[in-house]
Amino acid sequence: MNNHPIIEINNQHRTRTTFIAMTTIRTAPVATQSIRSTAYVASLILLAISAIYLVTLTNNKIATHEPSLTETEHHSVHSMMAQHKSAIINNGEHDPMKIISASVSYLASSLEYYHCGPLPDESTTELVLLHGAAFTKEDWKKCGVLEKMCDLNNDEEGGDITLTALDLPVSATGEELEAVYDALVEKGVLSGRPVVVLTPSASGKAVVTLAADETKLGHVLKGWIPVAPPAVKQASDITFSSFNKLSLPVLAIYGDKDLMGKNVSDKLVTLVNAKSVELEGSHPVYLDSPDEFVQEILQFLEEEQL
Image 1 (cartoon, rainbow, N blue to C red):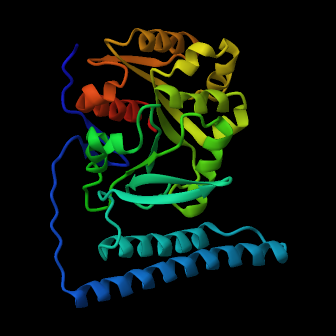
Image 2: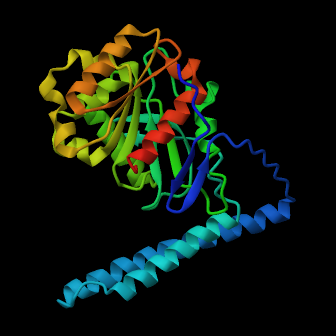
């Protein structure tokens, strides 16, 4: 297996440096915490006012048959919102490196997830992680992948990559994946732009079934990172035509001890022109080679400008 150098990833003229260990110790008196919390609430209120102002301006112009918002008006509103976002970050209430645990309701269910990263905007790379049949979202923490990637958000501007590790059951269909995506967008966890989805093993079923509907696939995905999903082997070739029509990039990763994973990856290379990467390890190769696994993901995101 090739040794991979440390990779530096540039995005929006900023640098992601892989695996920078940072330990931040925060101590503050109760009074200071109270002040920061008050400032945080004020920033959120100002952010909401800015959004209302934008909607009101647009509606007024539609009602009076005036032209849509001018470039100057758009710039003014978005500038205000950017300032309030910056204020929230500077107040220390939003730490993009911190992994938070939360839940979201979708369809008739509730789903737990881990999340880290900056507040979502147009410059953010959004990566959603599912899990295999014998695992949960906890395994992304245990193997260090989640922490390694969250630590990339260490620059003073709050970082530029979000990670959301879901406890979505491996039995979930594409319809359920889309429902969770929409719920996370509504909650403000995701921006509403298509995301990159990483699916180890059996969780690949959600993306494979979603591919049956080109519109829904494009609504949720802008890139796919399958790790030896058996659903690919079982699906017909026509299932993957949506990937080609949408020109969705695919990174197929498998372990050198996983023959099924190699066969699946080879099929994806043939059908959707996937990039195939073999790492040292077994079926859950991200547990065996977490550092190399993260490097390959970052390189893929950069090469495809995701």
